Length: 215
Image (tube, rainbow, N blue to C red; front, side, top):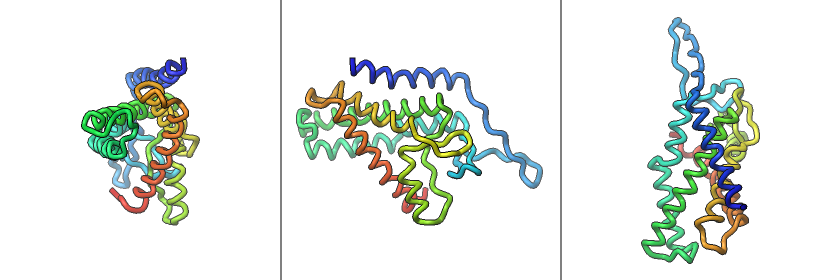
């Protein structure tokens, strides 16, 4: 019963998002330039409530695809599987090529579940879980922005709120994995533990993007 409940919790957002995406979304109205020519709204918007404009439906969907099955997402899962194979974790899967393949498939599967849940709940709740660098120059403000982003999202007005999609996606994906295809000794508590670790890793990566990787 526990497995079915968690599976339903993840599949529901996927169904809802299909309905939401089929209905479409209004693209923000272009803002007039000083010359009188309308300029298109950029997809990358500042992380400020006063300057924030919700990205259009195409941009949101493209972000979902890149995060779910994009080259960086796949490369990250391959690298993670390599480390886990070297550590032989979980040991039931072995430390050779077969175990490596199972770990890659597991990582890709968890990521697809997570990103589908995040995207679906973003669309249903009309929030934005995308990470935006801080517009403030102070070190403290930038650190705070990086650390808060994994557990927050932005509403239509750009106000930071509790990030239900990201939290549900990360914990849901890891609990489903622990309760289904992981070895029998794993359960939902291991999924909760893995989800918490991944939230911390996400915060650390945000710090990297905030201060090092400017692309």
